[in-house]
Length: 522
Image (tube, helix red, strand yellow):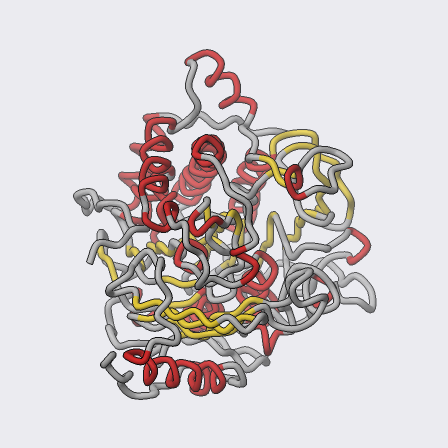
């Protein structure tokens, strides 16, 4: 079966890390760099410093709202991690929205256990998050130096102060970031930045990697980017038509676009746009089997899709350069060979498929995510089709550090899979997928939908009573729901049961159980 979200794989080389980074430096990079605990802000942590701890470093580099098929716009990431590391081809973000996904990374817990179900209060955003126990505090307690840079949960403000557990802390400190003219809470002070967000993070990531390397002991660095998230809409906009705008280009790419008459990665963007526009999911006209939220959407235009894909490609070009700069710094500091470098996104993004622009909903464009990793004992140029989750990252990082958490994690360590020591299924019964409060469908509380994604099926029951069930083996574009069909009745009943069980789960055994084989369609 052809996977509609995975571009054709290029031939993989097996060159060592240092050589490929050096090659990228010789080619050159275009991007230009520019210039809490609710009871009170914690003190800045004293860096750990000893020369005897040789545990691996961990670098997490994340994009925002990136589709899996948009990896075509990240050639340097693919060269550095895909060709010289491992690609997880079945990685899932099971709660495809910014704040819930970030909370899952920070806690290793699903939304029913970490309390963050959406982007706004009372059940979402930074207000619903407990920063006192995270992967940052876990690794600090384990002797790691830690750094957080970039976009945190929506709603974080400088008044919240420095989150616990971070040696270096530089977080965007208003509702959510934008590409120009933003505010950071850098250490213990508010900083207004007039430059381009991706370039600012690129410069700071290089600076922090150097500082962490000088501290001798192992470190964890999370660089949380904003690209290719839409830009904020027009000032004073209160209508859905102007709420979001295409992502903005960097000053250097704006200049080159004017000079050359084309945007970065324009040919690749146009090819991807053609693929989207030709897909059965985009051409779907009968959406009567979809929930009310989808059925009520107005029509779109092919021109809008092309415009958005080009803009997103341009934003990702700067992110690609930022990643290459960070990798080059790690190599220059002699850290690269002993560092697990992981690339993920928080959630995917639907670009007109099923008439939907955005995230949240349980379609493959939103649930599937890139996950690439390189590091000690990771085979170069390898691919794994073991299903994994963004929730698994915290358990994996603790496994790398040989550490424990004071939280009950829902995820499981990916380290045996990354290093080739295991190929066993980690989520044999399928993964819980869910969307939290969504105005106006649910109001400020409740679940928009809950369901299960297995190797073959996607099942979801929505707040309006709609049930979606897709047999992706026969319908990879999820055009025709088979919910309610007699031939799939046994499958539907079993997936509904698994949803109910996993919706109450807590802990690795409970949340990743083997339910046995699914019934076959009759």
